Length: 176
Image (cartoon, rainbow, N blue to C red; front, side, top):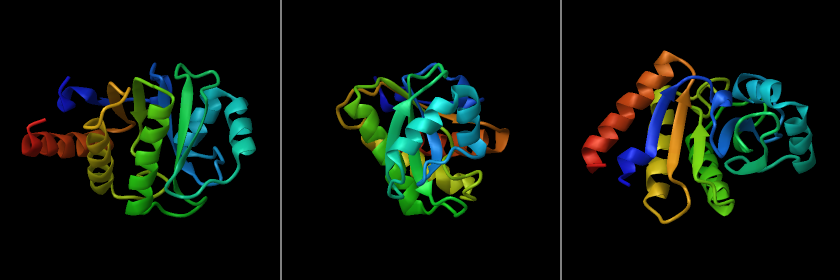
């Protein structure tokens, strides 16, 4: 399967995805407050927050994994791209994206869905978010592993358009 077929862009609600894992745009304290994290807590149940509480604080730029609770996804990977109440940085975004993929590979997962990490509450620019995340995912998918499909589930039209534009350019430049 070509790289261009492994990455799919969807406009919608990530909590509705029927994939092995969805990624939470998390803070490093793993507090499921607002944005994507709040939606995960509401739809997935408090058990996800309890698992996060047992894990505790993780380093920025890394990720942790919990079960999916009541979600269709079996797992939630919490990509810590910021401190609670702070902004996302390029290094933290890249690191937490790559670490999320690493955890997915460790579990032998075949499908994963990412939001635009840090572009909401984290205040990170959408286009730069798309460039960093799509670049990291494309780099990882070129390596052998279990992942067959990586979705980017963008909640609104501006996010979807930004990711679509960046992904189109990347595919043209790489022949993916």
